[in-house]
Image (tube, rainbow, N blue to C red; front, side, top):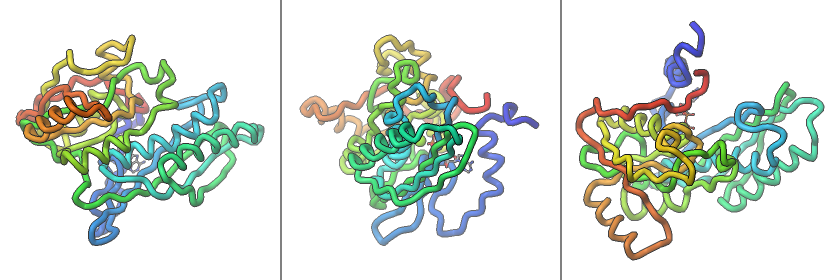
Length: 292
Ligand code: ADP
Ligand code: MG
């Protein structure tokens, strides 16, 4: 069988059988980050993301933006669990003829983002490859009471996103997005989301992950899905790389959030639909996955 026949998530599912997990692991494969034991009041979070030349970036793109993105997509995954990032290791594969100036630029971009989000870069690995690849593994912490996973959405919950969607790749926004760490921390500290994830593959596919994990359905109000200027509804659903947060709140907490945002303007959260008890109500998805 070829990978293209089962797709990215089919492959991950097949590989999951070979991933041993001890009983200490609180959550392994299947969420934005793994949840691991840490202290009486906190869990440790661990996530990793890889970018490859030709797939996610080219040498014509600004190196600092590539470094920023490599770290920012990991920070986004930690934020999606309700946590905050702490320590990172960075591995790079580079061709022999690669420009030292360029890779220093990548690291400058990463440095700025690391400093902005209080991340220490504490190690990594360097190898020779045919095309540039960069992989970051990032640790984080989350207070146990603040942890949010993908499997807690309940019928009657309101579904929200943190910002407009669509057109991220075409516009270049996928390279310079700001991970929604402050919004995530605000939410977990004040409004107790039942489920949360970041939108990396597209609203449709990513919301389906929450529906699948939570064994619920959803109804979306298409007119209220915020879109970037020039982005169609289909692009908002399917483009991906938006790195906005997608989360659900109980109707009571949703009403409290809506009330809060009539008075405060520091963040804005867009209600886009509701969770239903009918697990068959999935989102029609042509979302981006690798290998298809
Ligand atoms: P995200 O987009 O949030 O980074 P992915 O869609 O890349 O998450 O991955 C989904 C889940 O599958 C995550 O829990 C991730 O850790 C896991 N995963 C992805 N690739 C692999 C792999 N090669 N081996 C084991 N787990 C994987
Ligand atoms: Mg994610």
